[in-house]
Length: 346
Image 1 (cartoon, rainbow, N blue to C red):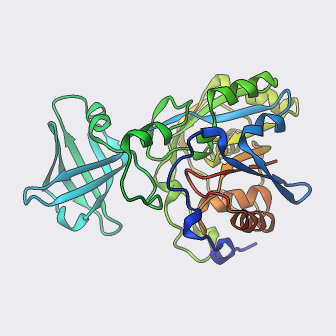
Image 2: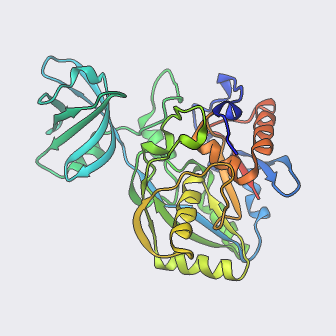
Image 3: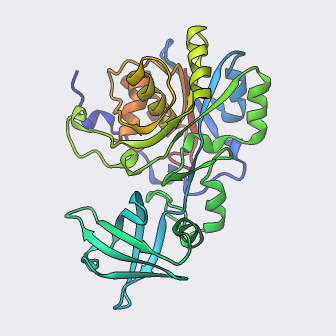
């Protein structure tokens, strides 16, 4: 059935948007949603192992955020900010620039310490600019040295804390460099919580989905079925595929940590029929009415109104239940978005 974008709107006081990470990762609150009963109740993330049982498979997204924000100057002395979106070929990047109007084709940007870029072309809207980077050393190493953590724009502070964000806007299990945003449901985990999970007899598996701009691209249509999430690079190993196939055949639960993990697993099983090793691009938009085949339970943060991530969560638990749960979270003063609290939906 058709859904209007307005059905996924909700009132959120600005003070509930978390601008800082909690001192302790696992200290977050967790709104627990029972899909079958159509109910929810307040809990704590530290109690997550108590919601898991022997035989469950907990799937993490092990992508690693790289510092995708760069600050440079053009010849006139004007400052520009560059947000790296996707590497199109070696040294050539699709970016978002501010202010883009200063960056006509042929202009050069100096980022310091020997890193510079030439503007190849400027897009028609949204600040899109294609750049070719030049440096005597490795480009990735220079970006890691000069770049800043790509925090979402709704995190507003009087001053930035780059060193803290480099550590806290990264999961403790991050391995594979390539994301421009963290898989935020994973930010709550500590090594101790993961140890507790394993002690319960839960298998911990990993996939990789490099979170890109498509995940957060604003929805610009009134009827949500017209929106498409852009493909994102992913990898599912033979080992993980074997674990997941065994769990499904034995009717054990597959629990996804985050919407990015959910999208990865659902794309893979929809494409192949069973979980199958692949490195490619996950091209799947999950909307209400989607039939989930891979995921039995989901840990996720609270998402933006009218966003594709809210569509996915509503598809998993039901629109009415999720929107009611969100209104409850607002009343109970939960912390929202990337550095905020979480939901466990089963």
